[in-house]
Image (cartoon, rainbow, N blue to C red):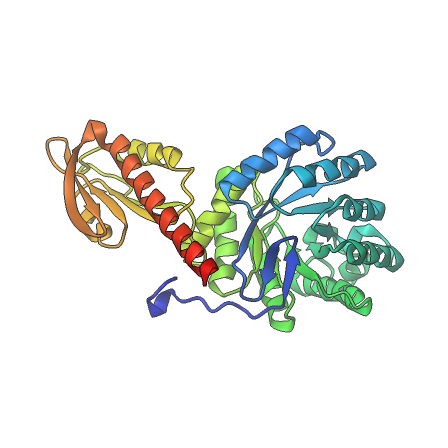
Length: 376
């Protein structure tokens, strides 16, 4: 939790729904999603990929189910993993019904390509019967023909009108367990559409910049678009869409939330870009620490600064810090105070040990508190 006024983000008020055991909207934490890229029919490969995403911190995972064989495999997948599974549906409404029967926690439908109102009604019935929520997924690339004719092109107004039109269909069926996304690959279009939608409804919003690109370009586009929305308090669950492995999407999503103080998980490294003043190789040290500390779940801050210009100041605001010194000897800080020195050749192993010890201490304290509360 941030404690400075300028760090406060006032989140938009929204209704709360559930995706399996994960609450979305209201006062629930903003959840991080990703999507598998294995053939869903290959249940074993898909399960293994989902488990990697779980270890990376995914709250929800989406799985495409385009064929009867994929919805058949979904039953095995759902039972083998911990996270709730969203079934991604396009064109074939029967896949949505099969996915609900197979145990999907949520059905992602694009009303623009799923068919008639009657077919949507059948999907709603299946969702209600099997305890699924629904995501209305509006996309600039697949808007309804009548909206393209009305507006001439995909624009924020068209995306919002499509979303509310389909939301009304669900509400007419007295179904309210749904969230909405209005995605576009253009950052300006997506952000404007979400801003407009946020002003006219209280439905929980799934935010994302669709088809954002590769690891580098997609991360930048997502940081601009999603960062703008999150900073404005808009967004209840998110996916960073990258042409990269799903675990990378999860990592980037978490970094976005951590950077804005909206959620805290794992080690947050504050590091300098390095320069001629550095007392050790900052770039390689940070790369090594990122890899070695990826398994840590407890929220720990770590500053890695190459020299004394900013090192002591950054260490004041982190749990553990290192500042480069002379003759291959560097200062280690704990809780903002100078604590001891370490030689360069032993630094990575030493810092890993300090962070792991801190994480174990935090985990033990959390477990003790949970036990105390359970006993009351």
